[in-house]
Amino acid sequence: MTAVQQPAATASRPAVRQRIDWIDTAKGLCMILVIVGHTLPYGNLMRNFIFSFHMPAFFFLTGYTARRPDTWQGFARRVRKDFVALIVPVLGVVQVFNVLLNFFLSDDRSLTNLWDIARYNAITLFWASGNPADGIPSCGMPWFLFALFWGKLIWELLGLLFPKGDFAVSFIVMLFGAYIGQVQYLPQCLDVAMVVVMYLTLGQLFRQHQALLDRYRVPLFLAMLIPWAWCCQQGIYIELASRTYSNYILCASISVCGIWIFCQLCRELNANNTLRPALSFLGRHSLWLFFVHHMDVFTSAIWQKDRLLFTLPCRIGWDILLSLLLLGCWRLLRTGWRRLTAK
Image (cartoon, rainbow, N blue to C red; front, side):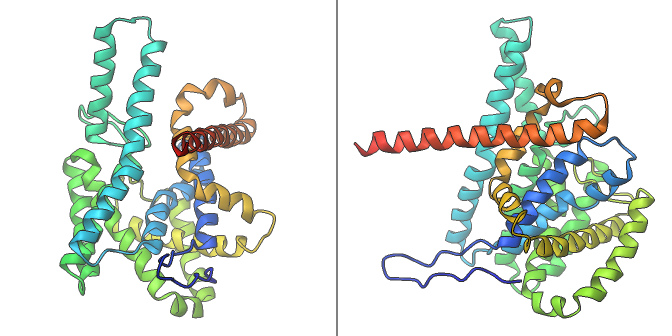
């Protein structure tokens, strides 16, 4: 792996940590796989492979690139930054957009109905569950952002409290979260966030030992490929959104195998000058594609076709096109606002 060289720090401008090219490529491809996985029917073999690693991979890649704060002041700043980056967009897009859209699509335009819709959406965001269960509503795909926010908060907190033993503590937290998820869903997807802590820790460990892992890259790839392929073919994999934790240790281990294989493929793919720019661009703006994909329930009439062979490219193309359109509008608005405030 070759990271981009960082510019030297100056007195007036501190050093800026550069992005890692293959990480952006991996995020872009993984986001496309999210769209594919949510289009394929249950039981489909390709869906099994995708679901075995796609959401854990995002958490792993976050841990790979993240730098945990070493002071409480830094921790507080990181929490505020993550809240603005992850939770505020959910409140704006999911709560406001969903409420208004559902209200205008409804036959009842009364204020009482508007209040009922807003209250129901607030409850879904309180639980932030990917799947409904026992009277707990589902907020859909934004569960991922809540799990990432709280998972990062717990992970960074553990780094401050246990600077030399965070792996063992992370493993215990993961097991506790997986157990709680089988008994009772926690608000804000906190039980899943505890499981996320281990993927963040593994991402950090993989980066720290990248040179050693690269030395045995081929044998590790082959050793992980066989059990991963067999388990996926048998339908044995983890689904974090639905708390599918049967054979948990096996499923979690298989997800790590899938992540490793996916990352190695993305590192090779990153050398392709044709695909890298597009995938890297999508990776850098994956949050836009994520939110557009979340709104597919309102746009299914556009991309839904009679045959899956046509539905998949239509859905991927539509999501990317709409994401680019919204991103372009946002940049124009931001540029216009800066010009107005500069006058």
